[in-house]
Length: 344
Length: 249
Image (cartoon, rainbow over all chains, first blue to last red; front, side, top):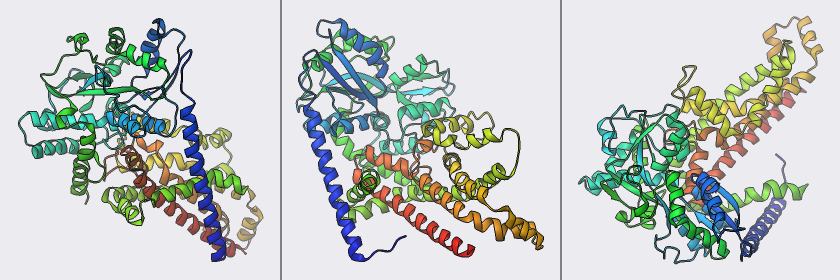
């Protein structure tokens, strides 16, 4: 290591800090200009930014179908898919977006806070939700363990695979499904938390995302996998040898979609198309439950007897703080207790 | 040159450090000292140390065989060494998962354990020591070995007094690079490490979780610790190299 005088070192640190500040400034300016540039559609280009799972639903179903409609004539798409939280943060940081679709409401809220999505984005017939699904239990072929509920995972002492709720925002649905089902069975809040804790203690692996979890499960890890119904259907369609059961008591997953404030009219048209019967039927073909209840085919999508939503716990904003704050959240505390109890 | 280095390396590193301390040193310490980050850092550092120790021995051995031995297919083996660099690490992770997962065709079930972390890191860091030692071995004057031999030195003595001191700077450089890489590795670990907090969650995956939880400051703080550990290692290696040179002259 080279030796330099303290004065010289200080000066170079100062220079570095100034350079860093300038870089920050440049980034901020860059964001401003790029989000301005994407306004007014004319012929119409929809810049779609979404989480990764519905990629084929958009590219093979919704977008071609929309182009067939009068509103969609001549509209072109540029698509971006990735992890929901990453996508939302990218848009916040300036990635041009007209229409966004995320796995969690908090990812839209982030853009409302940054002024990129209108505050009243939920002010419509379906409250800003474009698709539904439910948290299901994926099993080995034929469900050899006879699992029917989250409680069975504990009673039968099964190894379970569920994504790490801190690396995968989407995995938070799974936790809330287990928690809510325990509450529905008459348990107190503390007992329900203990149920979640017990399930997590039976997880030998907590993959980083839902797809990683599926990968681990088909690779032989665990007796059961907790995942979205649409993920299970996609896995079956992809030829994976798995079955799934919808627990009688489980959460209805609501995946939100919205247009940004400076999106062209074509993006709004696209969102409206997604809510039409035709759009919702395309979602159904891809394994998602339509948000229009009259279109839900109960032979393919049986309605759980006790289907609850995140509203049961006060909505995502509240749940994100109460359960998933990385320091004080109830789930962070559980993980800590589990970690400490097994650490020797 | 300075501008280039600043743009590509220095400013980003300074920005991360600034971010880590943006809520004050107290927050920095809180983020770093909470049990989950400590556990993740511990796992990563220990596994990385094990990995570089294995690399130091096996990498030197591989370099030796590639330089000193002749065998059919040597050219192919030589080019295979670099493949871990070329392969996207997430693909490496997937491949290792297929090999060492629950359906392991070779009967080794290491996935989702600390051993999986070590295996994955060994895979991605293999080339460093090999490639650092190889040129030194190639340029090593064989007359020195012959001279030592004619003066009655045994094989072991020749290795410890002639060969090893000459290779040491290369081994040290390779180890330092491999260590730094191992500390920050994400892709190769994400599928195979298990990610169970406190048990098999590596620092990079923990950082991912912090970002997903919108705790960017916490993520930056843990990254700065990784950077600091890397710097200490690099400084240490610098010392070793200087010591090696002095020993040489």
